[in-house]
Amino acid sequence: MLALTPQPARAHSGLTSSSPAADSTVTTAPTELTLTFAEVVRGSLSTVVVTGPDGARYQSGSLRAVDRTLTQPVKPLISGRYTVAWRIVSADGHPLQGVYTFTADLPSPSPSPVAPTTPSAADTPSAVDTPSPAAVSAAQEDEGGNGLLLAAAAAGLLVVIVGGVALVWRRRSA
Image (cartoon, rainbow, N blue to C red):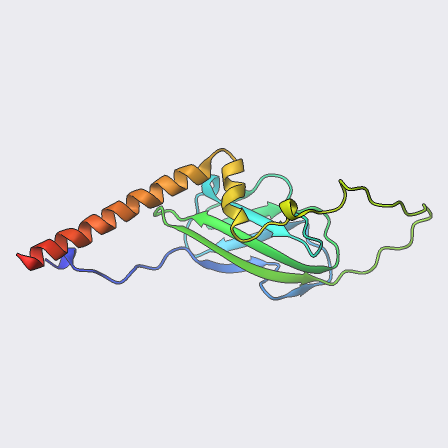
């Protein structure tokens, strides 16, 4: 009977640390971001989106996962505030997502002897290039359809939970 009664949710793989750290200011531009979680994460189902102060995405290269750590290479950063949106699936299959920010306070580049050029429309970020926390899911779909797989897994889990609650409710009514 105890197995059928609602139990408190068990802890899942939350973000335990990051580099650069959340709400920190860096004075040297990192070449990669590191996110560490409480449990092992499934790298093939994980996504990290890094958005710069100009609205452009700064992640580059492949996301690497080793045990509890995700490492995301980034393009050269500019000064300003960065948003890091992440989405993972922990070893127990539970999807989690989150967002944090850090600031880059970098030295100004030395002036170049080349005359500046006017940016073209292709160099200007558009609303399409500006990811929101929901963009993590879209980025995941772009990387092999994992978003659909994750949605199906979440729907299946919901069906199991609703079925269990209905079974307990029905037994209590009888």
